[in-house]
Image (cartoon, rainbow, N blue to C red; front, side, top):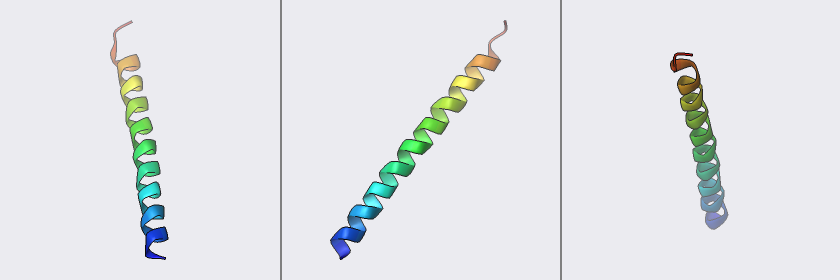
Length: 38
């Protein structure tokens, strides 16, 4: 049971980290897109 809980927690942390990385890369892309003078 504890093994299952730790595996689930690890998977959740990995999933959240992936989502956070996607969000940060998307915001960086937007800032570059709108920060550059056209």
